[in-house]
Length: 410
Ligand SMILES: Cc1cc2nc3c(=O)[nH]c(=O)nc-3n(C[C@H](O)[C@H](O)[C@H](O)COP(=O)(O)OP(=O)(O)OC[C@H]3O[C@@H](n4cnc5c(N)ncnc54)[C@H](O)[C@@H]3O)c2cc1C
Image (cartoon, rainbow, N blue to C red; front, side):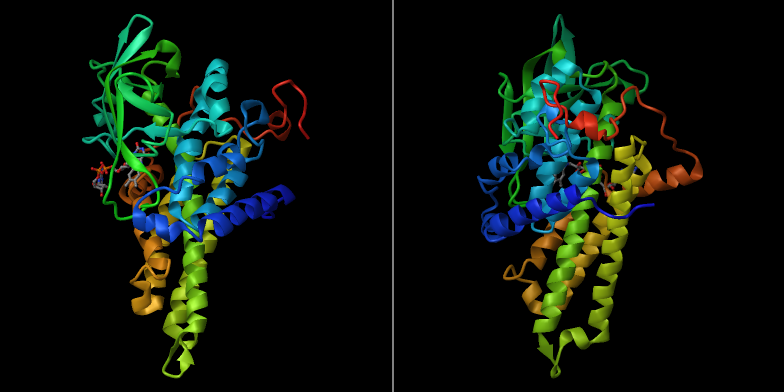
C-alpha cells in the first residue's frame, strides 16, 4: 500500500493553493457579504486548467487522475466552499457524467468545451417537490419525432445563472410501473427558447457562489442530447452523485483543515488567565479532534479517489467519505468558532463563514440521513451495487495524455 503523493499531485496542490490563497482569499469576505460570485473565478479556473483537471487531453482536459481532482477540491474549499461547488457541479456531476455515459459525439460537443472551461455546466436534478426522493421528479420530456419537449422546474441548482449547459433529469415515461425507471437524462443548452433561470438569495451559506432555479417551458431538445438510454436517468443521476460526492468529501476535508489552522493560529494569539489559550486542555481537545477528523476524512476521500483511478465501483466508499467529512467539517467549524470566542461569532474572522458553508454540504448531494440509510443498507444486505452499462473509465495515464491528433502530449 502506497500512501505517497506523486510529483504531479504536489504540483496540483501548489497550483490550486496558490490560486485560492493568493487570488481568492483576499476578496472572499467582500463577495460573501455582497452575496455575489466574484466575476474572475470561472475564467481564472478555466485558464488554470482546473475545470478540466481529470479529463483526457483528447477531450480538452489536463490528463490528470481522480486523486488530483480530490486534492484540488481540498485546496479550493480550504479557502471557500463556493470554489469547490464549481468543481462539484461542473466537473463531478456534469462533465464526469459525459466521460462515463456520453457518446463520442456528445463528448466532442459538450465535454471538450466544458473541460477547456469555454462552457460552464450545471446539474439539474432537484425540483421544488423532489429532493432526496428522486423518483418524485415531475418534470417531463415528451418525445415528439426527433426531439423531446421539456417542461418543468429545477430548484436549488448551483451555477444555474452562470452555466451554458445543464444535465437535466426528467420523466419520459409516466406509465413506468417503477417511477425510477421512467426517468431519462438530457444535456440542455440553456440558451434554448423556453429556458429561464434565476438566482436564490438569502442563503445561510455559499453566499459567494451561485445557486438558483431553472424553468423549462416547451423547450425542444434534439434526441442527440439524451444521455444514455430512455429510462436510464435514475441510474445516470446516481452515478453522477458518486462523482459529485467525491468532490464534496475532498472539499469538506479542506474545510476541516482551514478550521484547524485558524484555531491553532488563534490559540497562540489569544491570552486568557495570563496564558495563551492553546495551553488550556479543553482548547487542546477541540484541536486534537479536528486533527483526528482531518486525517480520517482525508484517508476516506483518497481511498475513493484511488478506487476511481482503478476503475472500481466506489458508491459505498464515496458515500461514507462524503457523510463523514461533511458532518466532521460542520463540527470542526463550530468548534473553531468556540475557540475564537466572540470574535468567531463575527465575520471579522473566517470561521463563521466556514460554519455557514459547512451546513450546506450536509444537505446537498445526499443529506446525512440518506448516507446513513445507504451505509446501513449495505451492512444489512438490503443494498447492493449492480454493475452499470457504462462505468467511469479507470485512469489510464497513457490514454489521458493522447492529444486530439493522436500524439502523446508527454
Ligand atoms: C447550496 C445548495 C446547492 C445545491 N445544488 C444543487 C444542484 O446543483 N443540483 C441539484 O439538483 N440539487 C442541488 N441542491 C439540492 C439538494 O441536492 C437537495 O436539497 C437535497 O437533495 C435534499 O433535498 P430537499 O432539500 O428537497 O430535502 P428533502 O428531501 O425534502 O428532505 C428534508 C429532510 O427529510 C429528511 N429525509 C428525507 N427522506 C428521508 C428518509 N427516507 N429517511 C430519513 N430522512 C429523510 C432529509 O434528510 C432532510 O433532513 C442544492 C442544495 C443546496 C442547499
